Length: 237
Image 1: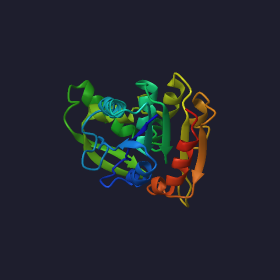
Image 2 (image 1 turned 60 degrees about the vertical axis):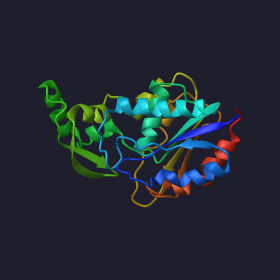
Image 3 (image 1 turned 60 degrees about the horizontal axis):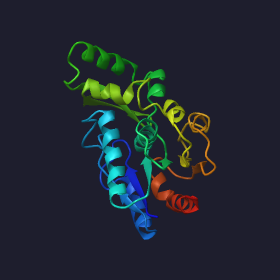
Image 4 (image 1 turned 180 degrees about the vertical axis):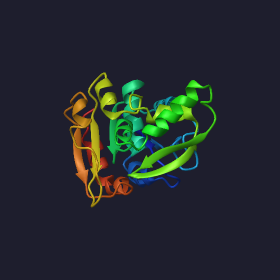
C-alpha cells in the first residue's frame, strides 16, 4: 500500500519552507508528498479565510488518493500543524497526523491580551458591513506581535477564541482515534503548551506519541526527520 503525506508550512514562512526539510527523506523512503502554499505564508498574509484553507488541504489529500495513495497523513508545522488538526476534526478522511512545533493558539492569544483589541475591531467591521476591507490587525508569531493589513472577516476565522483553529476543541471533535505524532520544540527561551493542553483531549490511539525535540520552533522539522520516518515506518496499517 502507498502512503502519502501533505506537508503544511508554518506562519509567515516562505519558500523554501522549513517543513520542506522532510521532503528528501520522504521521497527516499517511498512516500508521496505534496507541499502547497497556504494563506498564512509571508506573501499571502491570510488572503483567504481558514475555511478555504481547510478545503485546500482536503483537496491536496484527495489528490494523493487519486494518485494511488491508500493512506494519507497530514504533517504540519506551527500554524500548519493546527490546520492539519482542524482538517482531521472538521473534514475527516485523514489517516494520521504529524504535528511539529504546534503553534497559533487563538484562545490563548486573546486571553493574554495580544489579540483582544483586534478581535473587537474586526467584529465591529464585520457587523458594520466592512468585513472585506483590510485594516491593521495584530498577529503574533512566537511571542512577536506584528500589525498586518488583513480582512476582518478573514481575521476572525483564524483568531476567534471560539473558532475553528482552537486546538483543544479540535482534539475533542475527532470522531475516531487517529495515530498522531506530536513533536514539541525544546530550546532555551521557548514556551510551548504541555501534554495536557490538547494532546490528552484527543481519543487515544496506541501509536500516538507526544515528545520533546531539542530544536527551535523554526528548526523542528529539520531536527525531526529521523523521528518522523521511524514513526511512519512503525505504523501498523
